[in-house]
Amino acid sequence: MTADVVCAAIAARIDETGFGAHGLHVLVGDDVSERRWAPDVREDIHSVAKGVCVLAAGMAADEGLLSFDEPVAAALPDLPTGSGVEHVTLRHLLTMTSGIDLPWSETMMTDWPDLAREFLGRPSRGRVFQYSNASTYTAMRVLAASVGDVASFLEPRLFAPLGLTDVSWDRCPNGFVVAGAGLRLRTEEMARIGRLLRDRGMWQGRALVSGEWIDAMHTDMVPTGSAPAYDRYGLSGWGGPGPAWRLHGAHGQLLIFLGDAVVTISAHDHVGADAIAEYAVSQLEAHAAT
Figure 1 (cartoon, rainbow, N blue to C red):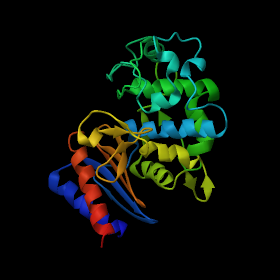
Figure 2 (tube, one colour):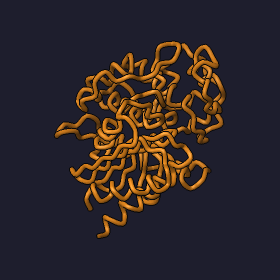
Figure 3 (cartoon, one colour):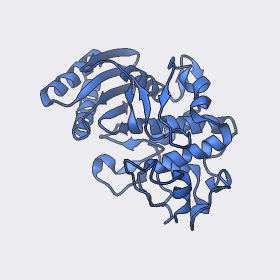
C-alpha cells in the first residue's frame, strides 16, 4: 500500500461526491501524499483539539503534576460542586462520563460568568456519557491549576518539537483556552499530531508523551448509546469506522488511524464527514490487502 494510491482514491471520491474538503494528507509508514481544494491556511480543527488536550494532560501526568483518577474538585477548591461531583475525576471529564448535564451550545463560553463553575456546580448522574465541550474545557481548567496556562505549557513540550510556531488557540472571557475547539492548524500541521499519535508519543526518536495516554484514546472505550459511527468513545477518540479509530471535529476535521496509516482531512462539510471517513477506511483496508 502506498500513500499516493490511497490519496488518489480518496481525492477522486471527494471530487465525485462534492464533499467540501479543504485538504487531504495520507501517511502510510513514512510515505506521504497530499491534495488540496482550498488555500493552505490555518483553520479551526474543532474537536480534534480534544486529542491535544489529552496529550497535555498526559504530559502533566508523566511529570507527576496531576493524576487522571483523583477528584477534580481538589484541584479547583474555589468552585462549588453539585451532588455527586465530588467523585468526578479528570478521566471522567476527558471521556465525557462525568454525568453532569450541560449539553453543547454555540454560546456556552459566554452563557455564564464562568463555565467551569457552572459545570461543576450541577449534579452528577453517575458515569453517564454526554458529549460536551464544557467537559473538556473544565478538564483544562483542572490542568491549568497545576501547570498554569495550557498553551504555554504545551509550547516547549508539543508545539515546538512538532515545529508548530505561533499557534493560536481561542480563549474564554476569563482567559483560559477554549480547549475542545478553537485551535488553528494547517492540514499538514494537524497531520503531525496524527503521526505522533500513530507512533504512541514518539517524535523523531524522542518520547514526547507516554504511549499509555494515546492507547487510552482508542481502547477501553465507553458505550455512548448513539448511532454506529458514534457508539463508543475513549479519551477523546471515537471508535470506527470499522476497525479504525478517529479524532473527529465539526465540519469534517478528521484524523483517521488504521495500522501504520493516518488519513488527515480538513474540510467544511459536517454532513458528509461520516461517509468520507468510511470511504477512507475502506481504501486503507483494500490496499492493505493487496
